Image (cartoon, rainbow, N blue to C red):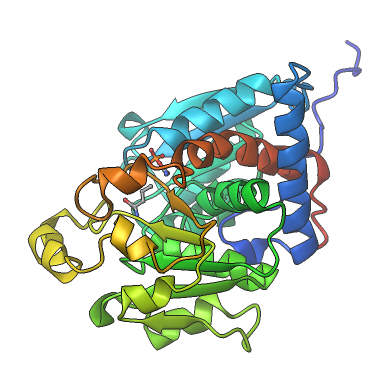
Length: 321
Ligand code: CP
Ligand code: NVA
């Protein structure tokens, strides 16, 4: 019996759960990889950077964009992926530690959309391969990678821009702030008082730079003044369905419509992670206007996550952050 088979391919071991898992240089490198990989893909020259690598995707909530972009992205890069829904019984059939140790022994990377942020943290604690946050109740960093890529493409830079978030200070908004704190980009939130980030959350999401000034105002018009990009998201996120009626009332004055956008910069773009509730947080007119970047933004999930996967599996230095 020979001993020539290589069963000891080293796995890199960095996670992507929040933007605090990467340095500024690493975040810029992920965005750079996304641009390079997108350009190659568009030119029909996609390199198979992830040949023979396997991604497992655990989803505790619904998804279109995240699921499809990860699955298509792995296929384009020469790897493979598997979708694990309710039937794997995360949190029900066995301990998270056992689940994580077993799953990570068989695959090279895991993406996890979890009801509770703590579940992703717990899974990562026991995983022997990288774990990617594919959305939790607290954050959605993969979305913000795509949003930053979109803004970079539209403006040619991420410098000297004002980004405004109108509506709920939710999971996506928290990741937007974390990413922008890291890159030194101004963010202003126009949010009803009771849905603003509280002091402790502001401390956490700006912890990379405690001097960063996050502006939260209850006046959406003031928030949008001179903005280069205006973001919104649903008023009722997955898991908040019981609060729907109250939330619709709370956010009634926070719709992104053409009138609100008259206060923005003349080149302002509109972003929404999608899915949208047209007629509630945003009008059809804005969604379908020339300043709407929503389809480019959604497509960029594919390219941004390819950059992330290639970085995590081929470049990330596990001794450094
Ligand atoms: N934006 C986003 O994450 O979309 P899905 O919920 O469809 O994945
Ligand atoms: N805030 C939304 C984002 C969906 C992509 C939610 O969590 O449901």
